[in-house]
Structure formats: C-alpha cells, structure tokens
Image 1 (tube, rainbow, N blue to C red):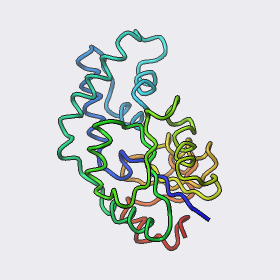
Image 2 (image 1 turned 90 degrees about the horizontal axis):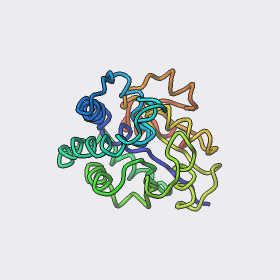
Image 3 (image 1 turned 90 degrees about the vertical axis):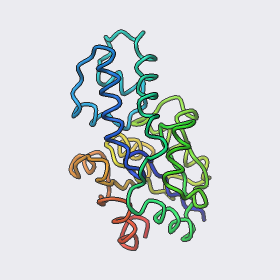
Image 4 (image 1 turned 30 degrees about the vertical axis):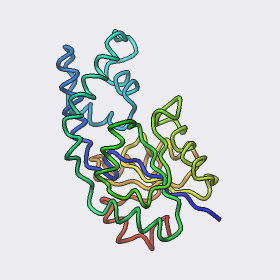
Length: 218
C-alpha cells in the first residue's frame, strides 16, 4: 500500500525563513508599517494574505495588501538564484523515495518562487508532486494544503507523515489527521512545535535522515 511523505519547503528543506523575515520587514517598512522582525518570524509559514492579516490586524487598510505582497515578492525574488538547501534535504527525499514513499511538497510558494526552491533542493527525481498555494482556497494552518497533498499521493491520512518547521505546519498536519514531524531549522522552538502537534522533532533534514529508522517514518 502506498505511503506519503509530505514536506513543507521554506525553513524545512530550504534555508529561507530569515530571508522572508527581512524582505517582509522591508515591504512593511516601505509601506509605513513598523512591524518588528521577531513578529514577522513567528508569522512566516502563513500565506501572504494571512501573514499580512496576522501582523496588521483585520482592521487594516486591505487596499494595501496586494502592494505589500508584490513588494515582498520583488524583494525576495532577488535571492532566487542562490537559495540554500538545508543540510541533507535532497538526500532525505531520495532516501524516502527509494524506500517506497511517495514524496509530495505542500507549500505556500508557487510559480517562479516554487521553481527556485525546487532547484535549490535538487531532488526532482524523488518528488512525485506539489500542492502549492494555487491549488487550495485556504493555506496553513488550515488542513487543505496537506489534504490536497494526500489526494495527489492517493493515500489516506493514516498512511502519511508530514514534515514542517512552523506551528502553522503542525496545526495543518494535525487537522488533516497525519503524523507530524517538526524540524528546528526554521527557528521555531521545540516546545512550540510539540504543543502544535509534532510527534517528534529533529534539528534539520540531515538529523532526520540519520535517525530515520527510529522516526515516525520507520
């Protein structure tokens, strides 16, 4: 029976969270908003519209949302040719693929950003499919991205493991009914990941790969 290994990308497989922090901070600054970087960091992992709402509140001038998203996209796009994969990312995906897992990415990235992330990971031979923000109505922490990844893999939640680096990932996975693994390389504390639903927590993809035989993938 098929098994699905579902992966978040930013902060989980590619070391981009702090690039998002700086570029969102600058986008907010340019629009006249004073948003501290630590607050931005805690919001990374949400889709653009949800991130803006989370940081500026529901009573904000929503007419600025598109301009803020566009500014962030332009600033972040400057790094597309040098996004760094996290230690062991590609090797982990290939090992799982070799072991019979259907590897699916579940990410809020799409288009050229998603292409840049996949080039950084350099493991397209192991990735069966991608559930991007273009494919769902609601992003994490709603379960839709993970549920869509399961549909693409053709497996039930009971046959899947989801790996992510944020509380939004863990909440999405928990709501979708899958086993959740957290990684610390996105900068979120272990306790926060565990409270949000992580069954196990590892330092980064390389640490998970080294301990795969005793992980929820075993």
